[in-house]
Amino acid sequence: MLGIPIPAHVLMNPLTIKVACSNCNLRELCMPVGLSEHQLQRIDEMVAVRRKVKRGGALFRNGESFTSLYAIRTGFFKTCVATEDGRDQVTGFQMAGEIIGLDGIVNERHSCDAVALEDAEVCVMPFDRIEELSRAILPLQHHVHKIMSREIVREHGVMLLLGSMRAEERLAVFLLNMVQRLHARGFSSFELVLRMTREEIGSYLGLKLETVSRTFSKFVEEGIVQVKQRHVRILDADALRRIISSQQACH
Amino acid sequence: MLGIPIPAHVLMNPLTIKVACSNCNLRELCMPVGLSEHQLQRIDEMVAVRRKVKRGGALFRNGESFTSLYAIRTGFFKTCVATEDGRDQVTGFQMAGEIIGLDGIVNERHSCDAVALEDAEVCVMPFDRIEELSRAILPLQHHVHKIMSREIVREHGVMLLLGSMRAEERLAVFLLNMVQRLHARGFSSFELVLRMTREEIGSYLGLKLETVSRTFSKFVEEGIVQVKQRHVRILDADALRRIISSQQACH
DNA sequence: CGGCGCCTTGAGCAGTATCAATCACGGTGG
DNA sequence: CCACCGTGATTGATACTGCTCAAGGCGCCG
Image (tube, rainbow over all chains, first blue to last red; front, side, top):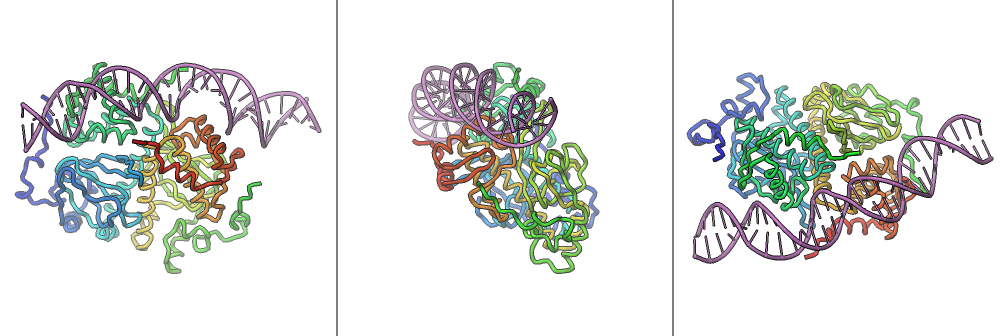
């Protein structure tokens, strides 16, 4: 059995606890640190509304008008863009504590879909309120800027991956990134349960699902990971890191 | 001859004109619209410093500490990220009126290189001053948010390109995007002079330089473009658009 | 138990990469 | 002025990665 620890807040019934940034255990993930009581309270008021999204449901869709950013409380999302001719591309997977919806700011309209890969709950943060508060609360202003910049830098990394890595490297990067983010949330640093299909992983990594599957099998053969359906155990993280920086060019 | 019109500001001697946002003909590209005289003046003061970068020189490099955003006045840049093992990936090409440096905000340190592909001049905008002013000038706050969101959306597009398009589609997207942005700056809508090498185009598009070259040759054979070194004339923009949405999947 | 969604695996193929030779252009120095 | 050189672009031949098409297999749920 792959025992994945479940953080306390998942076990608690959300209806029985007061949900507010000030006592949210994800606070340090989505909020600036070092706020005063009063500032925290003002932010609490801004994040008054929460929204549940069922597995498979959309938090927002391409073309819908943009009003709010969302902080993920629980659950797991993918975001994806599409061309008119039907192809689509997963642009990211988001987990608890991450902010989603930044794409909508520029045109006041979302330019991608955000779909829940498991039942999820998000904090709704109306963007005009964010702008208003970030004029008054300096650390919040910083924080908003950093979140957007972080997303830009993350996407640079994905571009590097898509533009110059081979299949094995892509999957290795993906697994290490996934497990690192989960670890930061209190989960194991070497075991994970994938919330997405092989096809979604492939879309994200610019590969076909068969290639993802084959690459998993290759890693298993080489003793680097154990894979049982969506349960993955990383046996040799260093091997994964070596794959990334080996780049088998050899002349 | 491919006659590319040269905008007035390039012909003017920059030493003889007062360079200030308030009389900059790129204003509507990098500044919010509808500002009062007084607001514009405050922004002018923020953008007091300009900096010239020679062709091949770096505006900033990966690892350097972040202090400012830069608005390109003249010239042309590429930004690129690199892995430890030497591979690198061009993440974008930037031209006059565009903002560069957003990657540095999150860690107060740049995470990519910005290199001038031709002699360039930028307006230096200290980021702490931007934050300060955007607390006071609402349209500026909006503008900063939109610029960052626009970059995120742009990168989504690149991810779609890198993740799911074939070589011809990538080059077609690249050419149309390039010419569209140049057109918005007063240049021809069907002729362009590439400021970057085939290798840099390839890096941006996730292709090898030979593939870029071959794809150009293919387009020439098909009568879609004329290519003479870095001079490109688009003869059939619709053909390029058709390439993008054809996706030769056929079942 | 049967159907369905998702995953795995195989065989053959297509599209790019790789390696290598040559060419075009621009700049330099004799 | 021209020969030479270096950089970047083109083109060809071949190799190889990942894609396509196809056939099961596994696990879950009604």
